[in-house]
Every structure is written in structure tokens, then in C-alpha cells.
Image 1 (cartoon, rainbow, N blue to C red):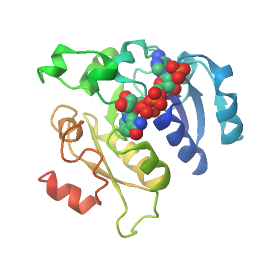
Image 2: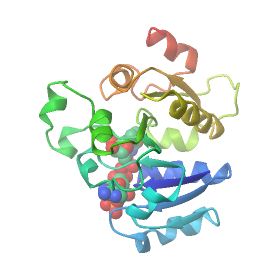
Image 3: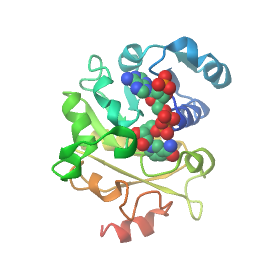
Image 4: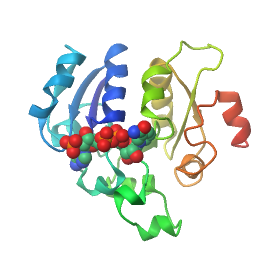
Length: 208
Ligand SMILES: NC(=O)c1ccc[n+]([C@@H]2O[C@H](COP(=O)([O-])OP(=O)(O)OC[C@H]3O[C@@H](n4cnc5c(N)ncnc54)[C@H](OP(=O)(O)O)[C@@H]3O)[C@@H](O)[C@H]2O)c1
């Protein structure tokens, strides 16, 4: 698959490494421009290229948005309609500034990203694992203790695609439901957040 990476920091670059390792083609982008990603692309090798964020949005069948949540309105809109978009973002007021609708729990950060990207099929994933554990924790399917990645979204087909991708790179996906209900279960501060649980334990704690 061709995967456009919007954000190439701790999580974005770690996912890009995994995706290239299992044979996908990635286009990585950040806010400063492709020339600042030469070292990462050199390390990733022939499955990778550096592009602008607008080009990353248009690049593939699937895109990953992995930016500080407070910057979500700078994510390019063009090119993402109809596409599966993985949202790894978390809301941290100390970094992102205050968003009253989140502080008052009137919505979620993923639904706000969805509202910014009309027609995109948002799947919240990889937000609830520390980047070092994402880097080092991959295991083959069926391994005892394989870490589960909670996912949520409002499109079943999009979640099936992301479930396959999560498995390919070495983790179990556990579908917790819609962005509004499921997504709330593994935001910062929730018990499934950065808990590194195996899937059975995650299902039990999520009351599935
Ligand atoms: N770190 C973790 O362990 C962890 C775990 C789970 C989830 N998360 C969440 O995942 C998101 C990314 O975290 P991170 O730790 O990877 O952050 P990070 O290391 O600070 O990287 C953020 C990336 O976003 C890029 N960016 C910002 N605005 C952009 C735009 N408009 N277009 C393209 N790229 C843009 C930055 O580019 P420049 O450097 O050029 O500005 C940088 O590459 C955050 O919301 C975070 O809360 C983090």
C-alpha cells in the first residue's frame, strides 16, 4: 500500500519504519519541508520519499495524521476525502492550548479532526502506546503478551483495513467501537491509555 505520513516525529517516523519494513511505500512529511527529512528517508531506504504535507495527503490509499493535536487545523484537507486516515493524536492542554469543547467533554479530538477533514474515514489508532513501545514491542501473531492497539472509528471497512495494518506491523488491534464512544475509552487519563495490554485483557477492561 501507499501510505502518506502527515507528521514525522516520534510516532510518525516509528510507524513509517514499521510500514516500510513490511513492504509498504511511504511518503513522509512535516511542517518544515521535505529537505529536513533527508536523514529519515535515507534510513528508510527505497520504500520512502519526503514530500510536502499536501503531497502526503494526496499520496496514498491511506494517510496517517500524527501531529501535536493543537495543530490539527493545519492538516491539509485536499486529498483526504474518501480516504482512510489514521489519527494518532492526543489532546494535551499544556502543549496544545485549551479547547473548551474537549475540556467540557462535548466532543473528542478525533471527532474534531473528522470535522476538519470532510469525507475522510477517520480511525483513531496508535495514540495509546508510547512511541518507544511502538518501536520495540512488535511480535508475530499469536505471541504471548502481544500488545493490543485499541482502535475506533465510524466506518467498518476502514477499521478492517487498519486492523490488518496493525497486525502486519506486529500488534493486535482491538476495535472499541465508534469515535465518540470507543475513542473516549483510550484517551489520556483513561485506564486503557498507554497500558500495553494484551488483547484479551483489553477487551475485558473495555467491557467488550
Ligand atoms: N510521543 C508519544 O509517545 C506518543 C504516543 C502516542 C500518541 N502520540 C500523539 O501523536 C501525535 C504526534 O506525537 P509525536 O510524539 O510524534 O510528536 P512530535 O515528535 O512532536 O512530532 C510531531 C510531528 O508533526 C509535524 N507537524 C506539525 N504540524 C504539521 C503539519 N501541519 N503538517 C505536517 N506535519 C506537521 C512536526 O513537524 P515539524 O517538526 O517540522 O514541526 C513533527 O514531524 C501527538 O498528537 C501525540 O500526542 C504521541
